[in-house]
Structure formats: C-alpha cells, structure tokens
Image 1 (cartoon, rainbow over the protein chains, first blue to last red):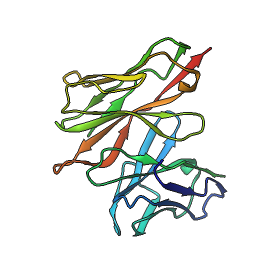
Image 2 (image 1 turned 90 degrees about the horizontal axis):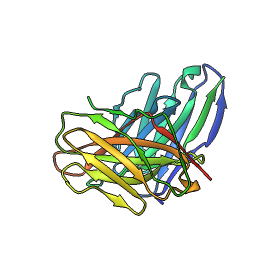
Image 3 (image 1 turned 60 degrees about the horizontal axis):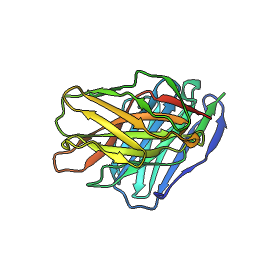
Length: 112
Length: 119
C-alpha cells in the first residue's frame, strides 16, 4: 500500500471556525491532490500540487486554500468552515511518469 | 472539459454470477487513461483496473475485465464470479495524459455505481 496518511480521520467543527486537514506521504511523489466526496457527486478535485510551493485550483476550490512547504506534506485549510463543507475529504498522490493515483483513508468532516 | 457518466446508480447481482457496470466519457483528448476504482464500506479507494487509451487490447485483472470502445467513448467493467467482497461503490475515472508521457494524476470521476452482491 502507498504510504499516505491523512489526519485527522474524523472531525466535528463549528461554523465559522478554521480547519486544517493534513496529508502526509512517504513515497516522495511529485503530485498531491485534495478531493471531496459527496453523495451523488462522486469525487471532485479541490486543489492539487505539482511540487513544493506549486499549487493550483481544481473544480471546487472556493472556500479552500492549500499549502505545500515540503514534498511529503499537503495541507488543506478551510478558513471559515460552512455547513456546505461537510464532506469526506480524500488526499491522493501520484508520481511523475506514473499513471496510478493512490488515495489516503479519507477524513470525515462535519461542520455544525 | 472532460466528463464521466455512470448511468446506473445501483445494481445488484447474485453471488457467482457476472455483472457489467457501464461508463461513458466525453473528451477531445487523444491520449488518456481510464480507471475503475472500488470503494468498499471501509471508505478506502482501491484501484481495480486501468486502461491506456492507445492500447487496443482490453485490460484484465483476475475476475475484472473492461470493454473499452474508444470511438464510442465507452468503458464498462465486467465482474465475473461475483463475490460478497465485491459489494462496494464503483467509480469510473478519466485521467489526461501529459505530453511527455505519464500523467498529472488529476482524475475526473463519475458519480459511482453502488453494487450489492447477494448470497
């Protein structure tokens, strides 16, 4: 199994509070991604990174920011959480020249 | 923009029988990859099978095989000898190939098909 760890695995937070989710990899892969999964929508890309300090927006980036200061860590921040951000969040990684993307275990975030 | 459509929200199959999950996609790209991912109740996303668009031959992985029709932009998954452990959500996904080969890994997913295998 690819070495990807997401933390926390579960979180409940209040509307308006900041939240940071962490993705840590031990594979030294170049690309890292944050997806959200909602019923009836499959997985949708929030942000991705193609290297340290290199990030770009995905399909549903509003309300989210990311940072990647080290190859192994990719952080997703909700600056002010809203109930519409209640979801399951997945981190994924892939390597240069590779075609597979490997996923973390997911984080269930509930905003109340 | 690419889109992936899975027209069967739910399906069921008897244990040991064969089932086919449908997927169609839309793209103007010539070079790309297609995938089927499985998500059991544990929530883990597991790669089931991969197909390179430039390959004519359909991919096969043990009991899982695909029917890739590039002109029709169709990519169905066949599960033979279904097992109880195959019960899961199945997602079809598209990935664009970069010019220098390999891929960026930016997957575009369908909405999924929930498969139930009944004893």
